[in-house]
Image (cartoon, rainbow, N blue to C red):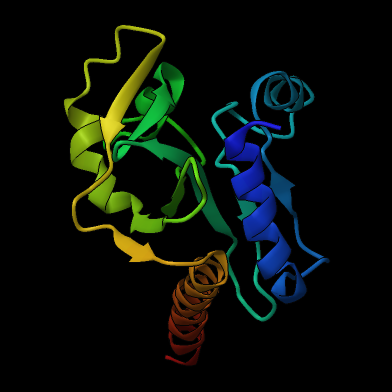
Length: 171
């Protein structure tokens, strides 16, 4: 199993009890599987974050891209850079990024907005690029801590969306 798939599996292991199983759940829908889903009309483009789930009680799904960091940098495909940069045409930009080092002893989280400057600066002329993770990323010493943060932030963002929608309906 690729390290990135292991990271997705480990995050899912901890967040699964809090996921709304009546909503869409996608894990590591990469490559040919994503292209097949686009061909079937399920998605509009194949650049889909590694984790897509909705926390119980949340109004919006949480979308997170998972990466393994080597010396503080992540390997990205050209298509991801082009889809997820500020001017990108991607329909499914991640809200955040979760990462681990290869040894799975360090874990990280950063919002997509923190990564936009790196994505925007990248020429994206080659098939793959190694981009440095944002310096202001949050660091965690264990997978459960990272998963708890994902749940906390995802739930808060979704609850804020629900509260805003409720307030708008009341007005």
